[in-house]
Image (cartoon, rainbow, N blue to C red; front, side, top):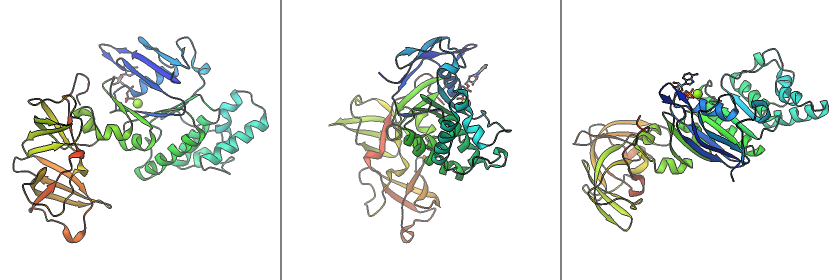
Length: 363
Ligand code: ADP
Ligand code: MG
């Protein structure tokens, strides 16, 4: 039995449903991210689990118990919502101690716990600071400390880094995972940012238009997006139509406008003659010495080349008109120039086949 189980949650807004028949489970100590575009129903789903909204159908179980009649304050869940601001008239200590005072803990215990949790979020010695004078990142740390202090049975975070600039967000998302893991809290984390979800989550649930589209570890959903919507949402845009022409020992061969491609896995349900969308991940190309026209090699015109630090980003245009982009670590001496023809061998493990989008999963 999982710690949290959500069964077929549905809520109607007029003719629309947010969420629409959503089921999933979260194990003790796990960090699960709900990832999806703005307006797909993530916040509504969290609010139902928190007890702030009532679903029209479905159930929320915690430790096997139906929470239908358990009011918000008796669920002992921690909330860190985007609009759940700090108390502006209280200092850092009083903000973090808030939940502990509600529990009527002895003063010494509150002080010890606040000290411990401030140390964990990197704010030791900040007790007497005025929260209004803290930076955005520090305020988020105080909010996190406040929600963790009462040792919630489940911590729900709704776009907690949404208001921070990119650099700070990147630093905090890595730190956030370390903090959540070090206290061992079970967490449900909402974001529309795939990098943030990948950095924080053990498992992600991808949503669109109220529905669950895919669930898996960050690696699984990145390597095998279930649908075209998921691929595009994850920033994977090298998508082209293909037709299966051969299946052999788990290897699939597809015919596409850029030639025959061999795909190294997921042979299972593909049969010759089936139509599919082919996804070529940007890291698929491994240039080097290779004869043009070899297996899985695309020959195309380089249209853009940009330096991205650890790799170069290449945009190429095939004779068919199709544009593809690749991320390739390259030595400066070997760089092609825009306008030149490049021959890029594609690794079969970095190509996959996607089933057509089903209802609710279109972008
Ligand atoms: P997200 O958090 O993924 O951005 P929300 O859960 O906030 O999405 O909203 C999902 C959808 O539910 C919205 O597009 C909106 O149409 C609908 N919705 C949410 N709350 C209400 C409400 N109180 N009244 C009407 N529609 C609502
Ligand atoms: Mg939201």
